[in-house]
Image 1 (cartoon, rainbow, N blue to C red):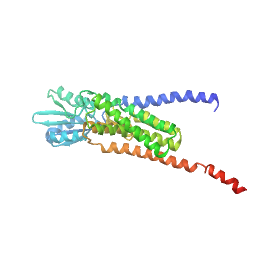
Image 2 (cartoon, rainbow, N blue to C red):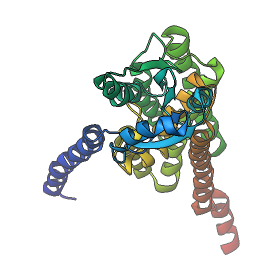
Image 3 (cartoon, one colour):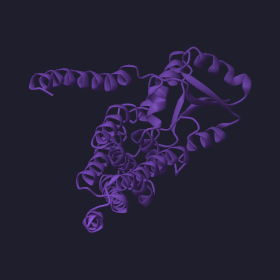
Length: 329
């Protein structure tokens, strides 16, 4: 490629990447709003009819789940079936939230439910069933962990590729690096900062699995497609995985299909899984855990497969060349 063509390519590529990055990060942020957000309503049907009618005015905002009483609604919140619930009793209305699931959603529910009833003069009591830790009430520290874990995975996969590690050695290096990242991240987030409150080893495992999912994907794509594989996975994780993860708010707060796509990528699945094991005793952890396992397994499989394919393409080697002159003679 001539110098002029390379110059033109760079001039066009940079603004294109900037435009894609701006779209990926700004579009979900600008369109953040509840979309079929799971919300419970508990109490006698006659008493909850008016509440459901009020919620229905927010067209497409809430997905209503009905429960017989407050205990059932609390169980649903702790199981991560719903983000909150409106309980109607003879004493009045009560709003149950879970700021640990999403401080943004908890605040939104207070505005949508508590604000309206207060304006009508009836008032409503708000109870945080699963509160966010006092050291991180807005979830800022947890949200900030998404990018470093993604970067750690990308760097680990790229380093393994650049160092020329192949096959089982590459797989062991990826697993070992991810395990160390998990231990360090848990030590910082749980032991030092105290922004996570669940089982320490479970949190470390989530950090490690999230890192391994990205690292294995990077190294696996590079083993099959060459250096371009590193750029492909890095682009996918950084420009789609991070902004579509729903970490600052919730997946159901993002425009479709961004929310759904984000949960199929490591940053989104990792964030959801970390919330589950840290604040909800592992509730609803199966889906995101399987997503991360599939990414890690497919990535490691690609690393091993790429090594075998390269070995098949390699010539027989010096041994064959040594025998050839003897056969000719």
